[in-house]
Length: 416
Ligand code: KDG
Ligand code: MG
Picture 1 (tube, rainbow, N blue to C red):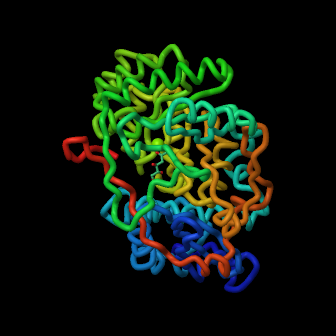
Picture 2: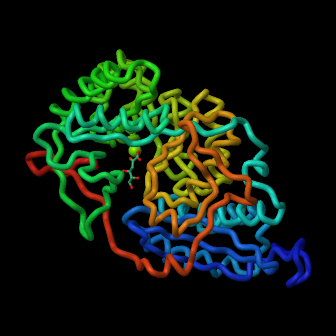
């Protein structure tokens, strides 16, 4: 039944899925990619990378999803989404939703290639010329962080996230000692890092005071608190940052408890962004419906793909919240390509995170998106425009890496 509307086997319009393969590669960091192929030989790619838990998604796909795909009509994107979501009985969760996203994006890629159209066109066409992105600046102290923000401005960025070393803390979130972007998953077992809130709360307003004084009021500035604060601490930080007009304060407090955000809202008008660890519309619902956030960060790879993200974006639009997709380097260029098409179309677009992939990663994933004047531009090739050089990928075998953990200075486990 599911295949009744496909063309004869082997014909150029044969949409039956004849093969699906999970490819794990580590060109500098681990990525999981799903490759789906139709009877007509059309290939679609989906990203299935879940940082530090890559093989859980790879196994879920290999054992529980791929056998269900073979023989089905690749054109039934919605029905396959519902099949994988409702049919699993065990709904939601990062592993399941990342696996569903990989299938969904691969099928949209196939649809684009069959139609000869770029993905944004299938979604409803262009709503903007380019996608405003923010880069990641950091420094061991305020001086260095400000210089790094200046470097991004000179590269043409119009929005920059700024993170800074905290006195007395060896490895604070978001600060790199190397020239390359910050990569938190750096060891086979989690690195134990130390956290202390008082010096952080003292430092961050001084960082942004300096950034405004050095770089003026035009540049958009963002900051990620990375779930470290209690609601009242987050409220205080959001209030202290008001004079510096942040574009957003991200993950000010863990979002499992939406009431925490009511407390922040009561005290501050600093815009709030949340959602990179969400994976379903149900995670986003209370925060959006209660008008507690301004930007939703849930993105394609961890949020069930394009099919589900459209629903999340529509829900956000009802409450005048905008998208601000997660775009760290642990999401592969396949996600970046798909996200840029989505961003180009979605009416309530806000901003896109752009933490540049390494040269090695970009060689393994040839892509047609380009950075120009502070914006990323998706290409015009059919589908999402990102490929995979399988021969090159095979030269970089999986290398186990986990994200760090954080403890307070007395040893108490804290949110990382
Ligand atoms: O895998 C974890 C990273 O994606 C995360 O730490 C990055 O918070 C992040 C961000 O805003 O990019
Ligand atoms: Mg973040």
